[in-house]
Image (tube, rainbow over all chains, first blue to last red; front, top):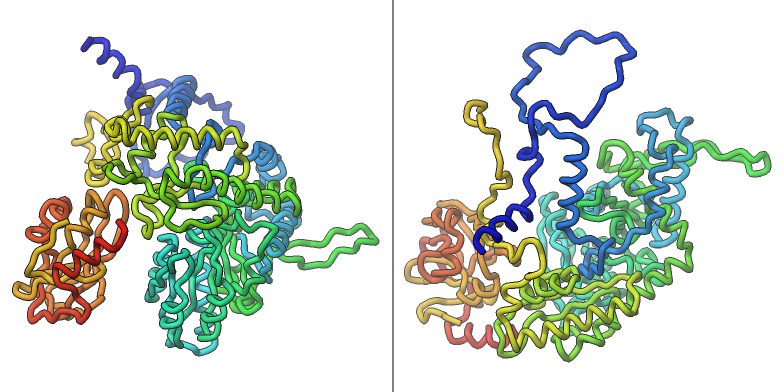
Length: 505
Length: 126
């Protein structure tokens, strides 16, 4: 038996590309040079000992294909990861972002040669304005957190421009994403945490007590990370504005609002979009993300530089297109990123997604996302405790623990993997003990949702009848339960070094 | 849940020992956090600190959290050993896992005694 299991180990452990390497193997064939050879690089800039792997093409393809099969993806199955809108990304996005006119352009090309790209960016700015109710949009920020940072920079610049320099405090609810206090910390502002009330709304009394003339503003995620629309959002915004603060909206959960509520209409001054959540741009390892920011009239002049604008009006009668180019906002906070944002990877895909759905389609997305989440909540309620139990938006948070059992959220999640589902978000938001944050998204049909419910109910039974089964899960994957403590304490990411490593250093 | 009778507790789960001036986090807190994997003390010897000032940052496999001073005073010692052995917070929260010590430390007004803190934790629905 021992021999068999050793043999099995050898099959399931994938070597690194370095271990697969052998000197002299190659995966590329260079054409003959059709230009004269340049002078050699200076000797002191050359290295001969760099241990780059040497592999044939087929070895590389098989290596990464095998690795991808160890993984679980939204193309493979249900992915109910809350607060991240891990939605299915339609494949037409992949076609459009690979159109040669988009793919083979360079951000430093003269604008006359990339009018199509600029027109797409201009129109995307306009669409995002229309969807969100804001007066202006920048497409520059690389992802959500940089969008937040841009937004907070604009808020600070607004107060500074008015000579209102004693504002140092940012109000952040205890249900907020961790990036909110991090963005604020980067500007050296002070975070004031506002607790939630028993219905999961911002606690108005605590907010009133915190509002004074030292407040920069408030960062609110709405719907919040409990998946709940704040029932007093207009009152919250009024309180913040009455003390001279600005209102920041974290757009991570915009998927629930598309075509139904516009944050700009509610009175938000600034909000970042996560194109990689709401508008079907690949997420995480499939990124990069994209975090445009929308602003109200009073922050318009502070937007990052440059924006895409029309620099010469067209003439419809003459069938003459406008000339698109770059414009600089009057009091711009400056450039947030080299070039113009994640154009092909983010902007073209998001443009495609919005164009394909149109206004009615976007509204349909929000409605189905909310319907699916409420369906799951209704089915799981009673078996799993739901601490803030009311009609939810695109997601809801359950407690992953049971009376008289020491099974925890993590064990439930690991067991879900055995049932071929990606686990929901664990242990967030922090205000719910053993949190399981479940966001099904709009694309999932009733059959998938029912299968998920069935697995969750079965796991709740197993938690009573055979808790060890959960604690040692997953059992059906190539690798079983990972040692998360070891992974967090021993930060050694490389298991391989060249044999002559010592002599190289 | 364990408490220690001679300690005072903050509602944010820090304890303060008026006798030695030591500050740490409660058994309840370490249990909620689960395995602690990282500790960073944010103050240095000689710093004057006020109640509510962040004095340390703690990360577990579940969450990261700031630790706030439950008392005011001058920092007289910092437990440097915690950085290399963050698991001490799980194994000995009231002993070896003290974080800092204060000289002439004055407890914050809103600290609870051990039995009141126990009651408070039971009422948190966790």
